Image (cartoon, one colour):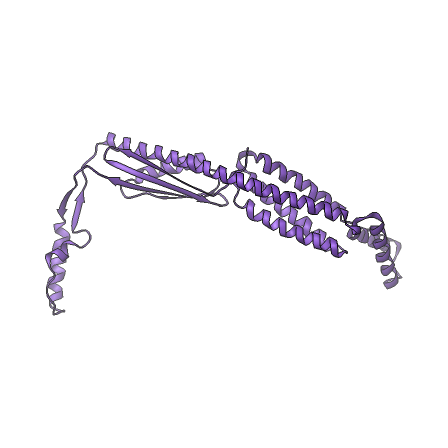
Length: 298
């Protein structure tokens, strides 16, 4: 399974009877699947079905689904909300005793929200159900296109990550090949550190001396860190190439990036060589770039 991005955009149009509509769906990265749905008044019944369809097609990401609906052909009728108009007239009469001003014109009152009401032609239950089904079907088309867009973006991320992992591999091998990592250099550094230790604290017991020698040997040798970097690198390449089960590649790669960073930090802290330290810092920079990219992977 190839990598899939959590970033994408798609739209789909539909029509049934007097109605036409447009779905726009877009997603960005998120820890889980977070769905926000904007449905116009009168179409709230389809929201639950829309959320179920989204969960069937996507596993992670912050998803926005916006529906716009238009109705044409059917003749709407208009009526005056006499109750509201009467209340407004009463307010105008009361205001005359407080404010000396010309009374409002009738066109001004009719322009107020709610005074003129629009009555759409009635629909049968079957017509409404067929329309809602068609709208949800259009959403499925939009979600499929969104999944395709996310897959295409995932392919681009795959190429970027492959290059970044190759850089980590190159830096790891350069670190292993530095002069400081050669056996003679490690042995000499350990000897010098042990000599300094004996001169500063000559009264150490044999047991304590053995402990100090073990600590010095550990600090002088970073081969374990390099071996773990190689192991993480192999796991990362496998995930980038084949993805993870059940859409977990993003989370797995994020965990690997943390492990990469842990080993790079230890490499820098244990390094007693300028060249090795510089390679460790460059590793950290490259690993940070990897972490930025994997945040967008599903």
